Length: 161
Image (cartoon, rainbow, N blue to C red):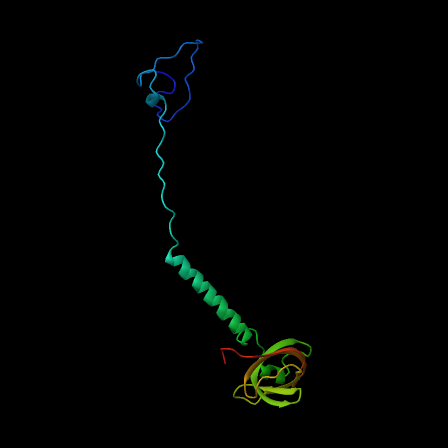
């Protein structure tokens, strides 16, 4: 039995104890390339196309992210109740985001009221003012139980009234 016998994918030559002498090869004629070297077949296939499932998952993630951004802008996430501020439950100097209806505007003085309620906060805003009776989100600092100071933004609600 020679070294490498039974290996069809081997390119390694045999080694003998005697230099210049070749061991007997039972696998075929001594000079046959087919007996000594066989190249395995390689199958090439076209790359798989993107599945609809991956596209659907990506669209769902984008949709949820977009709704999260809109919900945050519209005051559905992280807002403080005007009622809690009026009751003194929120400490003076606390940064808050409140949502309500713009009910009064006198120059730069504005009031925001709980939608369908009577609790009100006043604030000063020198930027562009939204129309009266629009639902807005105001970000500022609690300065008393009836007012906000250092108002940083007044945004009209886009979608979630």
